[in-house]
Image (cartoon, rainbow, N blue to C red; front, side, top):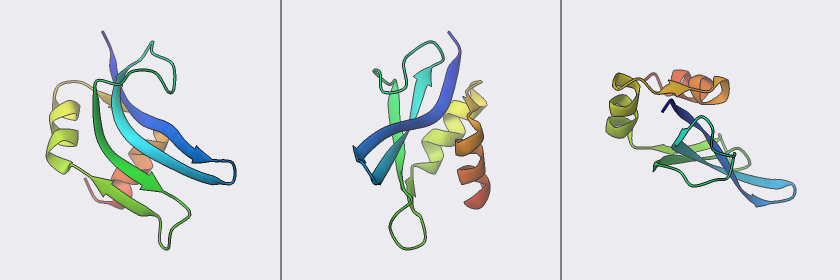
Length: 79
């Protein structure tokens, strides 16, 4: 079971809102996630990002691979 850290979409048309989740690789984009780790709102001010750093580090330590977008968000937050 390969686990990935990726974005799950919410919000409406032209007002996107994303949740950063730990999810199995074979699950659909908005399918059931293993754990919600934070949020990302690109429309508010300076890209509002909320993240549980401890849980993100836990998942990465245990072999979860972040998607390209999540990797850039983590890099921006210096994790």
